[in-house]
Image (tube, rainbow, N blue to C red):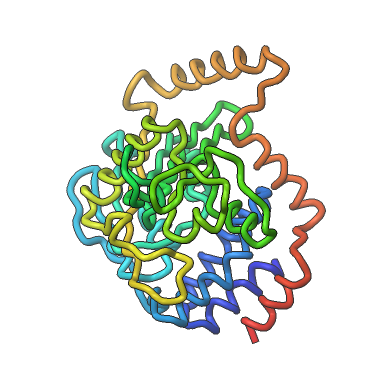
Length: 328
């Protein structure tokens, strides 16, 4: 695919080794196919900047830092983490098929794009996949003023007997930082409930949110508690950096993020049994779809991917020109 080759060429020109560049570009194009342009090749300039300013090591090769039974730890070694995610998924697939469950942590990691995309190979093998990631600080502890926890996305995929899996993919903020950045660029206010200023007070000023402020957790105090739990899962277990220890992904200067991720694979055959699991899945899906207004999680992604494979992917002209310039 031309777009994947162009993205990989840009990453290689910025210092990424071929395998790192190819795996990263493949994942980003998959996001574009699924109608997720904010996590697609529009991220290539961002990753190129991280490689060029030393915040990511293009020569890093991930390794297994520890391994025991169904669990292992992957050291990303400060590279773009897509190869580490692929290694982690391969490890938990093998371990789940042997032990019934596979658990992999990733340490010294960074931004890994749309989280559910990494889990789709598990669903293709009939495994349930669950993923957590932390990120640079964006959410305050409940009642606090300073950002401490990341947006801390969560994803899960559940295979079905036929058709596409269920795919859940969300972060713990009411809205993404990108939407607030867009409002700031346009000089538009943001709705109440999106962000807090540096004093921990709700604000409708996007600049106040971005300049020392924080994002409002989804569900208020409950979202903040989930952010705390995900932070501990991703960092306490892997030794990775907490959100407050990592500089923003989007800073031109800063430390290497060294955040963490956790991937979990479960073989339904180890519990109630594969057929029983599939029966239970379809019973729930049938009940949900009995209401005409229900859309299954992930359905829009897979529909977009089918259309894009037939019609191609459109990207803005200025982004295409930027990618070509980066690849030159």
